[in-house]
Amino acid sequence: MGEKTIEINDVDGRITISNDVLTAIAKTAAEQVDGVVLTQRRGVGGIMGLFGGEDPSPTVSVETSDNDVKISITIMTKYGDPVHQVAQGVQENVKADIERLTGVAVSSIDVYVTKVVPASDNVAVEAAQGDNDDTKG
Image (cartoon, rainbow, N blue to C red; front, side, top):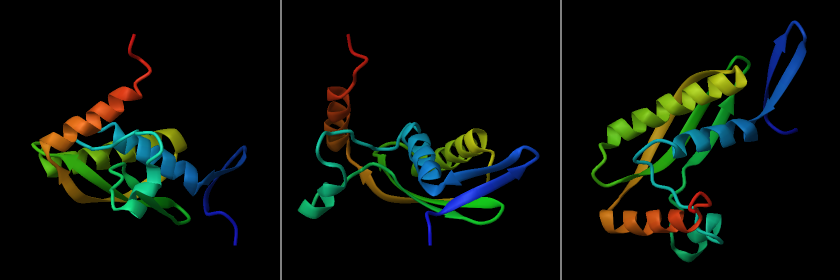
C-alpha cells in the first residue's frame, strides 16, 4: 500500500492531496486558536514522551474517504479559557482552513482535550514561545 491520499477529479484532471498535507493544515489551524496550548521549544518535540514530559502541541489524525475527510485532534487548553469554546474554535478553524486550502469537504472534526494547563505552566509555555519569536526587534 502507498501513502494515504485523497483525490479530486475535475475537468482539468486529477489532484492528489496527501494526508500529511491535511495533517499539517489541521495542526497549524488548531494552533492559531486562542486557548490552545503549544510549545516551540527546541529539541523537545516527540521525544518529551520518552522522558515523562508531555508535548502540548496538538496531535492530528486524518481519515479520508472518497468524498470527504474526518479529523481527530488532541489538544491541551489554558486554564481560565472555556474548554468547550476553545474546542469549538478548533473545529471551526480546522474545517475552514482545510476546505479553503484544499477544496476537500470535512465531514467531522473530533476534538479531544487531554489537559488544562495551569497559569504557572502557561507562563513557562509562553516564555518558550517568546524565545523562538523571530518578530521581536
